Image (cartoon, rainbow, N blue to C red; front, side, top):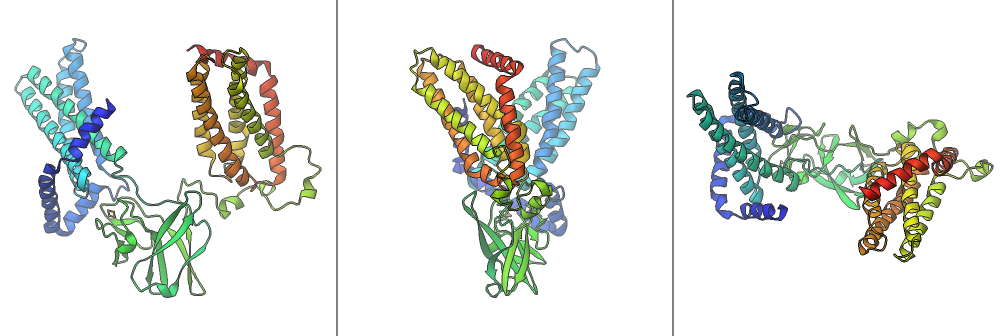
Length: 494
Ligand code: FES
């Protein structure tokens, strides 16, 4: 089904015959905007959603989809005889009218965004908008038919319009989720977390954007930064435009803004906020300081970012912070560090995988070993989720992904324990599960465990003690074992 739909969309995307009407309509929209001057520019900004800080189109389409769905539901219930009162057709009629008003807003906002698309996306957008317009026309016809007392015909026509809306919604979703239109294209790397030199002041010309770059080691890619010198000050923002990824360093400066060369979005040099669309999304910002003729920048982290910086580390309770306590100070501490406890558990799990795979499929031992492996994976997830991840979330950015990987491992265990241990599918699944586990354990050991060293050794040993206690309790508690066995039995049978 998916392949068939992809092929159909592919035909739209390659239909060059759509280019002529597409560019004619696009030009008509931009010419109207030019003639309309400032008021039409403000209207375009509102339709894009600059004032809102998000595109308006996805919000606007919710109105017709919601109200027309309601009208369809009421019509179906009335036809089925569930709702027989007179209020039902009136409510359906009202819902159709509200939807028609919303559809007009959706078309206006859609056109404002669509005019900046090119190539295959412009073609898909044109078909998407045409189907929407057809759907609106059918709904208006249905409203008219209903007003003339032809309720049955009106219901058929709005039902057909609903099918049109479904197709067009699919195309709209394709444009956003598959093709990445109307999403943020800026590079939001947290680097550099501390001030680094990115240019010499002498390299910057007054009012001419300059591209500097820093390296993001985790993402293994270069992050472009657009620098602009104005008088005694230097401003910095992400060089990749949030609208569609245009090169802002190739743009120009106008009235205290940096203008994107691709679609003309303007970003305030001081705040990085778009002052004019089509962009609705601010650029990544950087603090700038000038030291001995050099330009140094530091990424200004955004609300919701989980970047670990010197400031976030400074917020840790003093006793949790790694202040470089010497080894002799902690030699007397009895418990292993959390990272050592977890590394040992990783090793145990690695050995268990090897044993399961080395045991012949016909050997009844294999089933028992798989049970032990599944139980230990479950315990591993429980102890990390309950103790380790919450403790290191302030010093490591890997925690969210690690939680997600636990979900993947649990799903794979569920799929594997159902299979007969002598089947080829079991062998394949265990190998896939082993790969998933090795990836998970490997990334923890190479990254998260190192970052955990930002905590004091005392704290890591306290955590290690808690982990050992919980590992013990998980294995020995009769209640926990019974619960886990029951869960495994359910997974095997369902
Ligand atoms: S890429 Fe469209 S305005 Fe920058």
